[in-house]
Image 1 (cartoon, rainbow, N blue to C red):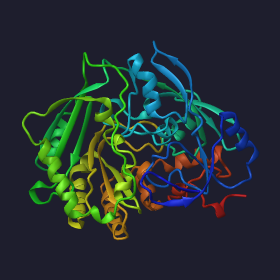
Image 2 (cartoon, rainbow, N blue to C red; image 1 turned 180 degrees about the horizontal axis):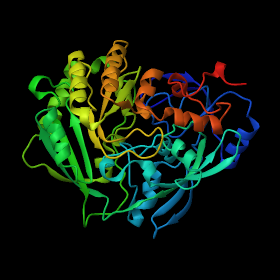
Image 3 (cartoon, rainbow, N blue to C red; image 1 turned 180 degrees about the vertical axis):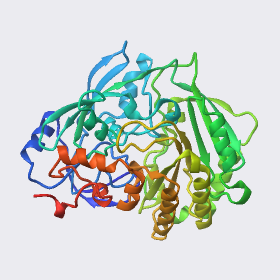
Image 4 (tube, one colour; image 1 turned 135 degrees about the vertical axis):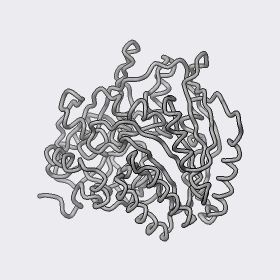
Amino acid sequence: MQLEGWGRYPRVDAELIEPATAQALIKLLDESKEQSTLIARGAGRSYGDSSLNAQVLSSRFLDSFSSFHEESAKIRCHSGVTIDELLKVSIPKGLFPAVVPGTKQVSIGGAIAADIHGKNHHRDGSFCDHVESLTLALADGEIKTCSAKKNKELFHASCGGMGLTGVILDATLVLEKVPSVFIRSQAIATHNLAHTIEQLETLNDNKFVVAWIDCLARGEALGRGIVHTGEYAEDAPMEYVRRWGPSVPFSTPSLMLNRYSMSWFNNLYYWLYNRPSNVDLDSYDSFFFPLDSIKHWNRLYGRKGFLQYQFLLPEDSAQQGMQAVLERVADAGKGSFLAVLKKFGAANENLLSFPGPGLTLTLDFKYESSLFPLLEELDEVVIDHGGRHYLAKDARLSAETFKAGYPNWPRFKAVKDKVDPQQRFSSLQSQRIGLTSAAEDKPA
């Protein structure tokens, strides 16, 4: 069958294996040690090829909860459980995941493998900072329990390790006690990139801070945007919310997305929020997961799909590097609707975790052959300014660019080779960026 990530590029023919239980998955690994490489796949919400291979091992049916301790705010669940399913269980108890990404349709296993981040990294770190322990199935079927205290080396390689150390079977998460699941939010318009970054700094004490950037604005308006901040509201409802919205029934013509339509949308969005008082009470669903109400929104980019490009620049070079990136994007006329700028806090100990002190920018580009030279230019800017790219969003990084951005990659590779000497767990991405061999080069 054909499989793809959320960006719909690339697409591959793959054998999808869907074990009904964790025991069946372990047995499969034990009995098929000499077969071809494979990679685990959760809900399929990574954007590129990090969960693609000729053989894909799905956690779809590993979707149950093992235990829930309200007093300690800890919950143990299998890796196929999605954040949405977690919310259905935790919200009635007054608990919420400490970190959530921009969609609730991410599996817990995928959240750990990508060490996802949210709008509050500057305060609360990334998802794996709130994982107490995880259970990992190694390539030979052996089971390892890992935490920051037990099998520590393997824990820090698996958190953010893109599924390359083994299959995450389950995890114990530490949730956050919240007064409600509504967010008191505010939107502040900014005039240019310097003003946007200044506002991110000024508002950094807020629980949630994120900026939308008009990546087609030029000249004195380059980098103008809307900074959104939020705090959990007191005395507001504590209830699970499910919004119903439209569904995109088919891939729209890619010609609809061009410099003019995107410029019109960006101007409209900026105008809507460019007013003196802009304070709202938002449900968690609309604040954290605005696009989840539009089913199959990725079809809006056309049949060939799109590439999401997310990078991090350290604080001392962030403004200069961001300006260089935005100038190139605006000049190329390939801006995106979804341009998001955030400030990160301290890095954790995970070897391939993406966040660290600095600013991160996310851009969406529809697929077209003329895009790739631009992305290579942006890669040079990112690396020249000491940055790196987010693997969960990547579909085309070179091995050289990856290794330049992740100085801990040799340490990760050493752990990987120790627990998986035959390179059994491998993805198209890991082969491309030099973390594993291609199938034909697999060790004997």
